[in-house]
Amino acid sequence: MVEPSQIGPSAQIIDGKRIASERANVLRKRVTKFVAVNGAPPALAVVLVGSDPASAIYVRRKGEQCQAVGIESIQHRLPHDTTEASLLYLIAQLNRDAGVHGMLVQLPLPAHIGADKVLAAIDPDKDVDGFHVTNAGQLALGKPRLAPCTPLGCMLLLRELGTELRGKHAVVIGRSTIVGRPMAQLLLIADCTVTIAHRHTTDLAALCRAADIVVSAVGIPALVRGDWIRPGAIVIDVGINRVPDPRSGTGATRIVGDVAFEEAVGHAGAITPVPGGVGPMTISCLLENTLQAAELIEGRLAGTLG
Ligand SMILES: Nc1nc(=O)c2c([nH]1)NC[C@@H]1CN(c3ccc(C(=O)N[C@@H](CCC(=O)O)C(=O)O)cc3)C=[N+]21
Ligand SMILES: [Mg+2]
Image 1 (cartoon, rainbow, N blue to C red):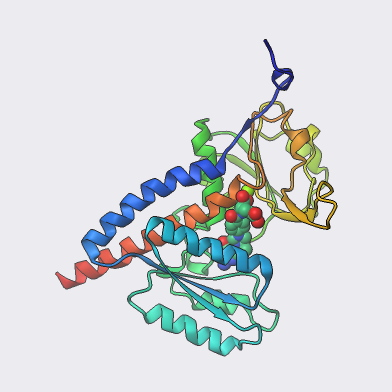
Image 2 (cartoon, helix red, strand yellow; image 1 turned 90 degrees about the horizontal axis):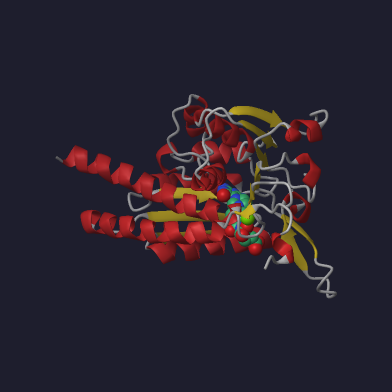
């Protein structure tokens, strides 16, 4: 007996939430080992300036996930009118604090604070977002140290599928420094042929139709249509777009990605949902980067002490 849902092609739905929770179990064991060796847990400092509601939710979720694997979470919530100088002062303190292994400043920052200057002030060894020019440069050289969490999470999802990446044509839509560019670098390291598309790209549809892997990170709901997806291609949807939820009738919102999911699911071989795809993997990779930073820092200290 064939269910209607089994008639016609339908993609494998890549369950980022499940994969992230399985990885949390592995991370928890690594953290336990770290505590046994070093006597204290890895610690992540998260700095939030202002009260953007989405940022507040993400920061809270990061704290919860840290706690779930035994990483100490230190959160600094600063008022919207915090000066650039006082934010730089806090970063300098966190850089010096031997009890802090990783730190991040939640983006976006208020307009009166220069994000480039702030990111440059973070000790690259504690830069668990991988946004510092040193870490971006290492990645561009093909020798990543701490790499950005969202692209790392996308790579883990691709690896989880078990398909050979070497020689595959990957189209990355979006060239942001936090997702598109580092994503392209990681795909290159995995021996993909990589095309980066952006707002000036002509005939994005035709480009996507030639792709084995499409990664979209632009923030436009339903930009990527079902018939843009080559049969069997892999679709990674990084978009987080808040839209009105017509089903609620109460003005409530829901989040959708950049891909018209219901269309694309009939074409793709595998596709990430939003929510429950890339988002949970981003936080999972943040935890992993924090543990990696802590292991490197403590390993180096142990080396200097004998
Ligand atoms: N310095 C800095 N580092 C960041 O890594 C950073 C940032 N700033 N600013 C904002 C973006 C966005 N981001 C997300 C993290 C988790 C989910 C996530 O967990 N999403 C869930 C739930 C989404 C929801 O319900 O709102 C999901 O997709 O299933 C989403 C987005 C990290 N960012
Ligand atoms: Mg998601």
